[in-house]
Image (cartoon, rainbow, N blue to C red; front, side, top):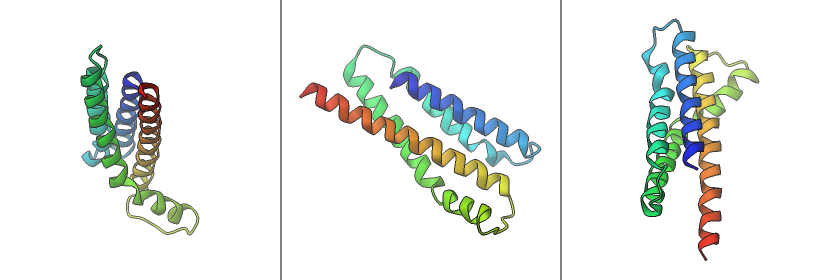
Length: 125
């Protein structure tokens, strides 16, 4: 899971950079996915260790950050559907799209981590 955490971190960093550049480099809040990606990347790097207790702690911290990021952006999924299906206009549609992408990426990450935690617990039992 540590390597997967690094991969998800890189994806979020790229999302943040593309969002920032795509908005004309005027909105620094477009870099928020990159900050989450940096945190996940660092934690993923720290989780590459032979110490099982340390790895478990770091991965639980990483999935908690992922969950908080998802919860902070989850409403954007609804906003995205309103924007595309109901044609509701938002002041910054690129922000809605970026937050939706971040929410989906982090949801997938959290689900994969939970699945891995369950498999690890079953393997220990």
